Amino acid sequence: MIRKIYDWVLRNAEKPYAAWILFATAVAEASFFPLPPDILLLPMIVAQRERAWRLAAICTAGSVLGGILGYAIGAFAMATVGQWIVDTYHLERAFQTFHDGFNEWGVWIILIKGLTPIPFKLVTIASGVAQLNMAVFVLAALATRGARFFLLAALVYKFGEPIRLFIEKYLTWIAFGVLLAIIAGFWIVLG
Image (cartoon, helix red, strand yellow):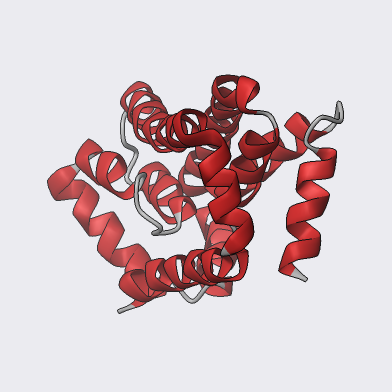
């Protein structure tokens, strides 16, 4: 199944709608969706190395826009939509910890957590609840998410064909590693 999804992404990476799917996934992940856009970004860059920077920019823009949506959920709809998202992923305790952390660390929470597998939606919603300055929030999200996606793009761009061969040879293990990173992110937050 993993191989079929990977092959589908590679086959469709050049289609006109591919960038929109990547963008929408990045928006959703930063506000309510559990899967990171990296799972699309990586094979799309492998398929089109010459578009690595453009794809990283699309992913960054989508993630920042999704972050703004998550911020708005926290600032204006925490009692309804925000609470539903927190409850759906069983992040009640972690959310309170993040919220309290904003009072002490502010923007550093975004800069550090945006690079990790910890669900970014937790950070964005908590930022809205904490009423973190919107300009500071956007700049921090742009810096941390941009660093994450452009670093991935740079690695794949630089190592190109060997990376593609490595991914294709160890796809199941890589997918398992990504799944473990997502689970670890939730475990760290819930732990």
